[in-house]
Image 1 (spheres, rainbow, N blue to C red):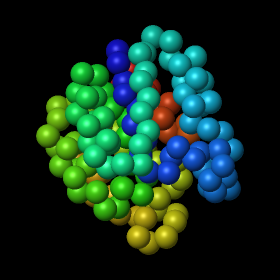
Image 2: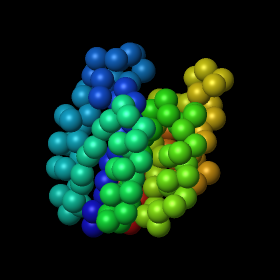
Image 3: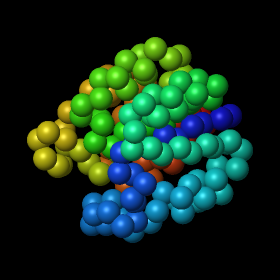
Length: 137
């Protein structure tokens, strides 16, 4: 089984950005934990702050069995990501580290979620493991 993890804008700053919300661990550190937790799953990881690169990564993810996408702040505005998800056959699970519904009003709307196979929010980095469990089952 192959799963692509794609992180969007500002997620390259995990571990230093708003640690009270996102935690002190970098995603690269957590990714190593995921690889240890799921040795039977081939995981790939990509992060970009550029919307065009995220679109390309989603299209490349079609060769995988599943895609985990945390678009960051693009969640609320990037219709192009929603359109890309609609155009591919690989299932996508949208993951967010923080609970979007416990934050500012403008963060409580995802233009992407309706086009995804599932939505996980508020479980910290463990949300990625929950998504992998779904695909692995």
